[in-house]
Amino acid sequence: MTNRIIHSHTRGALDIVPHRLLRRRVRDVASGVEGELMAVINENVSDSAHEQWMELAYVRGASGREFSTAVTNIEPAE
Image 1 (cartoon, rainbow, N blue to C red):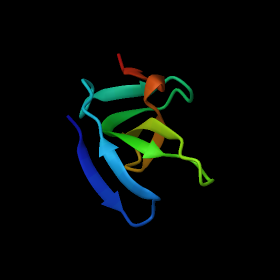
Image 2 (image 1 turned 90 degrees about the horizontal axis):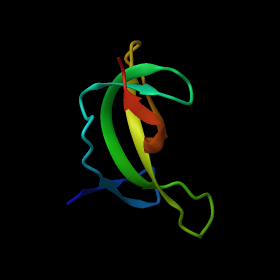
Image 3 (image 1 turned 45 degrees about the vertical axis):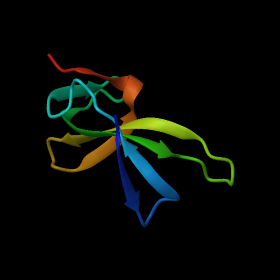
């Protein structure tokens, strides 16, 4: 089950997706950056009228700033 939220800066609703690593330390394999996994969201990433949905992981780095990456890029940090 997912929770649905509405953001005014996006093109519609977003689905919050459960993930086994939420609130745990993770690594983004694309950049090598580590941080805490704050959320996984199924988000429309399209710039056109044709929707393209993707699960994005939101990670809070050591600086306190969050960044997003594909959820498939996330692995537990050791």
